[in-house]
Length: 343
Ligand SMILES: Nc1ncnc2c1ncn2[C@@H]1O[C@H](COP(=O)(O)OP(=O)(O)O)[C@@H](O)[C@H]1O
Ligand SMILES: [Mg+2]
Image (cartoon, rainbow, N blue to C red; front, side, top):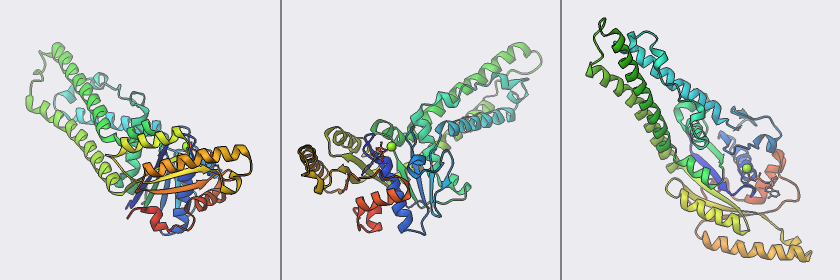
């Protein structure tokens, strides 16, 4: 059962991916009995680079209890749309009369393809699939903790708006589909009126409508399930550096995501270490600007856990580098506090 979904958000370049990966490594190390999945929602995936391992669009084991995936939302959206169209075709062939129309498939509207779905929604659909317990069961891995590296604010909000948007897209397609079936019936009955009774069986039409309606309701239920899951076990962490643009970004992110997920902590990354701050005039200057924003951010996010991390001398890459970054961030913080900073 998914116990925790930790989502990292913030502006590009502030260290979201690095901190997500470092957190996943730390949790997996400290909790050997928990299965941890690290997932990236940036189109420019970099989990592979961070771990110097080939991850890609499949759940890939990194250690005995840590997995990662860089999903290709297109691949999933293609499977999804194909499946839906297949289901509708089957449904239609099972229909009395409609199913008898020769070459009925030609009339089916198959314009519902992966290309017709916006990227944010494709990502969202994939996120749902990962979070949906039923799908996870079918993959035989039951994750306990999911660490998600989210894109900057705009796309991040789209990821939470899934259920509504997804239902809208499928509803639109279903209406097109239904209309195309009606069109087929109309054409057919014009030509073959003398051979067969026109399709005017209201009950049968209603049945078709009801089946399609149920498919949409199923989807909506799944959406509700996911929304509830994120609501119950989701934890948002906003990452910033001590500068104005990324500080503004995390304020926006906080406001826009409030209704979907609980904000638990703020990370202030890439601070100049104190021992260097006075070493040169330039360093002192930059450091004093950082200290000003550090205070501003802490004031703005009073009551939330704030984790500070210095800029490391070496890029935090590979298991060792990421573990170093985790130590820099969390020091001796207990793992239970990392999971729930504000119990
Ligand atoms: N605390 C840190 N010290 C040094 N380098 C860092 C630190 N955090 C991140 N980096 C480096 O900064 C760059 C951007 O980090 P990344 O995690 O890719 O940011 P984002 O995902 O927010 O775009 C990367 O090269 C990463 O290795
Ligand atoms: Mg990134």
